[in-house]
Length: 261
Image 1: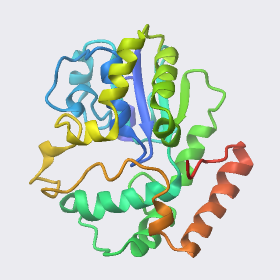
Image 2 (image 1 turned 120 degrees about the vertical axis):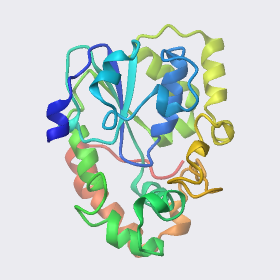
Image 3 (image 1 turned 180 degrees about the vertical axis):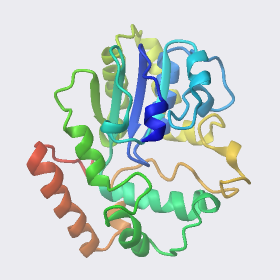
């Protein structure tokens, strides 16, 4: 609450909002290219598209327009102002759970100090139990944004649709932000933003954190695929997760989350 009260919402800005492991870095890099690197050719993507929660107001004010930020906050905690646009990307809970476990247990193990050793422990201890995850319960996070489905300043996209047809989704983002983008530029952005390209790119693969909070040699970008949860979660875990999906998302909001391609 104190952090929220300190913040001054920024006009003519764009906020990328996601639950963890739902395409945040992907969208950072796409918008960085769509806007032609407004903060210059930075060493890594978090310098160009910073965490809203971590930057001081003075640095935010000094950024060149258009200013792009990323956040894992729920809708009610994101600063609001006329002229601000929001892009909310969500991903199916099974893949989020498996990727989040890898993120805490393997990649940023030194940061989280998570003591659980298996995915099943993580599923019970952190993901499926309300109030345990760093960003809150997955389903509560989605619901906070889905309550704004009629808000014309928010573009809702999915990780699965981006995997399925990245060109279409990048075009959709450009149209939403009213960015005039040639086919040549779109093709270049799509090519640069494919999984293989980004996983090798030092600007986006978090290699700059190796040996500090990130375990050296660990993969920040796990697979970049849809449906891996089917090989990692038990049938009982999958059933529980997707029962909640139906009760908390599909029925109240009319949204059926795409879990496979």
